[in-house]
Image (cartoon, rainbow, N blue to C red):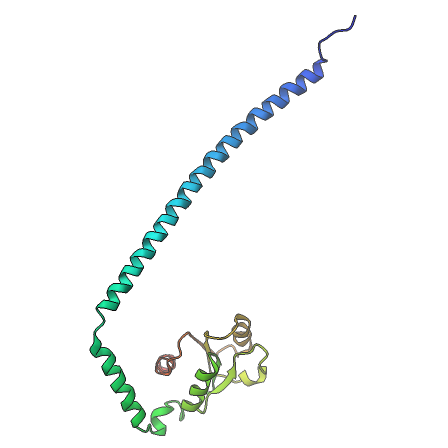
Length: 187
């Protein structure tokens, strides 16, 4: 007579699988609840981002409406005066008499040309990471303009200068600010 009941080992394995299934079902429910909470947070963040962007547009518009016209006229007059006045050599290169070697890396080609015109004693290296390492030997101040230069070039330049070299990192094309920051280093 054959028994219709499965063997005990199969029943044990079935009970174990049912327990595992219940555990996994609980984990799925917990992860689903966590995912739903993250979805709600994400949607809230998106709404906040949209609200902040609208606020920024509103602020920009308010700033445009309140911009005084006289400021533009003064800037134009100053620019015209600077073009008319012929700068003296001493005014242009404040660092000509200092026994320093200052090297410049980065910035646009036009900015580099302005630096060379204003400070003929500066060594302009360029913006390519394949620059000649010997150009940086003996540099006292390394100026890195992070505009229009690769990260690899700036890192190579920082690694090639001597240990005591001051490194000045700027992200502006304003030569007055450059001069002020160099003066701050020298002070």
